[in-house]
Image (cartoon, rainbow, N blue to C red; front, side):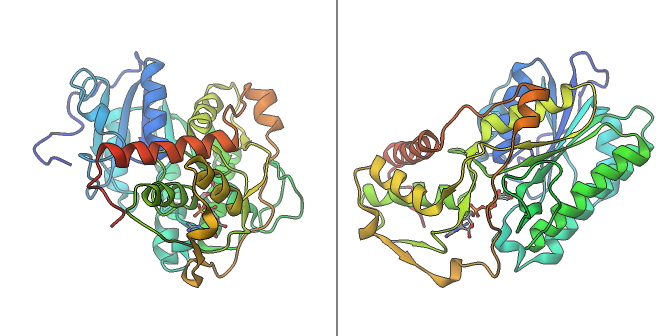
Length: 349
Ligand code: G4F
């Protein structure tokens, strides 16, 4: 972030227009949610870590818009491991709604840094809930929970009632946070909601997630910049949807008259192999000529059959996914190719 910019100044404290605070605003979901809330007439405040760089982030187009930045979009420094900064921002902004999206979100990495993962994803959520509990005007709170909490589930598809069975440090941290949200809702009366989000992707996805890695490398192969794509388990299966659909679900969940938990999923399973086939064929390439399995990308344990039952979100919120798997992968692959063609010097290095 440009240190000369004074973040958090001039922010309105009343709620007309409605005020939302987003943790994790610079991520894929944070950027789509910011766009949605601005369209809905909100003033949007984002909590960003001191280490965040906005210049090249997914928010850069909004940050550069002088009619928005510091007018209806405000950024504040606050860290999930620093309760004082969180409390200060919450008190100053006095939001009507909080969308808590921040945390260490890479499952594979959580096996390497389990303590950091729990510090931010589990304890960071608890810290926020504790601060909210003491506020005189309590905002509505959305927590981005994850399908990973189900791990190796007893049933498929999974619903809001499926017992948690996490199999990674990340999943364990999310399970803790999800249950804490339920406790603060039931025991302390907070309007606190878990959105149990299955995998959701877009051209804005981070580069170390498998959809983006495949689409990006396929485009680089097409452009002659790469020849090999190294992957872990290509038989792994997930329920993949489009991030723009999932942030709409987050917003709808906080507009309902009662706080509750909702599964956001497409209800359809696909494999990593399916991503490969769609991405390479969108570019007229043969995946067989480029893909190698590299054990460094295999995980110590993998969830199984993570596919969501989205009936409650459909019925209670009127939510539904609008982008099919094939369309999603094609959009991501073509976006990567367009990016490389626009800036050919940007290789994968
Ligand atoms: O894209 P992934 O890294 O996503 P994962 O682990 O399912 O987690 C994502 O979705 C969760 C549910 O919404 C979130 F909670 C979480 O924060 C994150 O957004 O991996 C998907 C699958 C896995 O089975 C993985 O083992 O792809 C497999 N895979 C195979 N080769 C690979 C690779 N994953 C990655 N990242 N890189 C590979 O080379």
